[in-house]
Image 1 (tube, rainbow, N blue to C red):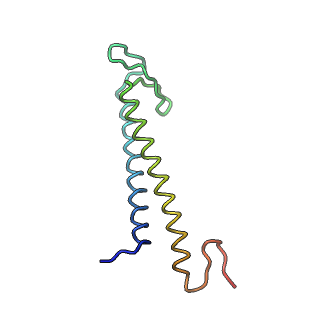
Image 2: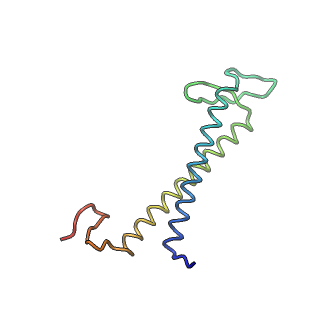
Image 3: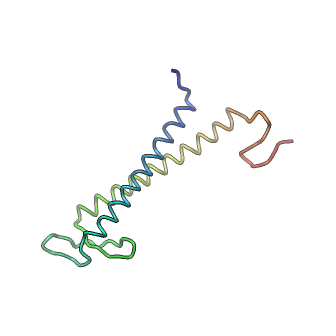
Length: 113
């Protein structure tokens, strides 16, 4: 099966976007889990001194937990932006390479006369 560059671009954009959305869902699940189990006051014996506001509740995390959660959020957001940028690029290339046979110009939302 021979794949065209346009099909490859679409597949990469879809994979990046879906994996980023999954990462953001995982990040939200971790945050909600942290909100339920972590203390709302600093615990010096466990080194829980880093405050984090999770849906209006201040919880205290260790530096490692904070770093891990920030890492997941930042990587997911960057992957989502890359996937969306590739999706826009795919849509632009598709509209130039595969014009509408009826004559509609979908880039501008108007019919060509």
